[in-house]
Length: 147
Length: 137
Image: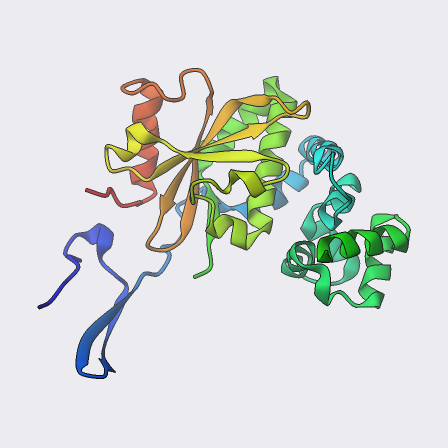
């Protein structure tokens, strides 16, 4: 018995394929792993981070986006407890802008906002300074998020 | 797989035009793009039905049924304005599932965004194909 994927169509054609054999007790599987590589961007296409960098370079759009963050900060979890995201948005900062202030990378901010368990005390204080809030506010947000 | 959101030049132009006559809607849309760009797990799950409940500020992703019936993997994103009301625009996203790329294809007014056979609908498909997203049969 065999199952296969029709990769004859250009749309489905993988960039590369790696055949292998997987044995599981009495059964042996012949496996072919297909890899798809992202094609280069078309002329004029921008990935979201490039596009947002261009937006930030336009004073009018940058100011409008900052105002939208501030409004979102008020709106986020209005009926719920404080969070790191809410503190950041209230300070009208993107994750990338906050990361720059903290001398770190944007994915670290995303990770802390999702799960602040791994924040050190030093990071909490630096967070507070960058956001212009008391460290107790950041601690409270991490305490609430950590449950 | 690392997921990516790509803004097509046509969608960039539409956001620019939106800025000229509805700055708040345009800014909220930029905030949504920023949000998706910042949160890799959220982008990964963007098209999973029912996820809207955990988004805060809230937005909603729905299958564009008329497009899906034609083999086009297109979703609509509805987002809110500052007062919590629904924005009068939709972001239409095409998803290339083989390489984990989402394409912001079109910014369309809520009214008329889903009219099958309209010029906007045909243009949406044209952009979808231009991006090289497979048509699923």
